[in-house]
Length: 206
Image (cartoon, rainbow, N blue to C red):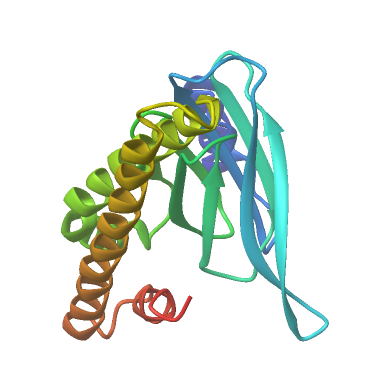
């Protein structure tokens, strides 16, 4: 009787999650806004192979704003979803079914469901949000200025001023990264029992 009720619930709700995943397997389904259809995106994460950490990179094609990745991980794993430019989002995967909503124009403001550790990550992201937003804006401006610079002729009158502007933007980004590292260090000290804290500390070294 209980089995029949469970089956009926699955049919009524229509959730794929009713199907059990094999151990260590993850499925990441996502919805992306403001991205051209048929764009190829990449998911990078580390896996343990032959007692060594190996960086895995998978790709997917966005169709009707949707994408899907699947693979195998042993537990909580840091991952980065990248678009064909500077846009990227860093989050934590688990061997389970996950759903991700993300805006290509504001990748730092993504929404991830399906993992337990995201509750910890939300606390961290609140501390980092304004820095991530500013970092994204400055990187976007820098990329645009570099593109303009390469389009100028050697004798263009505004070439030197644009180059100075690029150097200034790079210095501003360096200062911002220092501020972001301070947030990471403070967070790890404040929440040493969080499962993501070791990875937050690791980011200070890379």
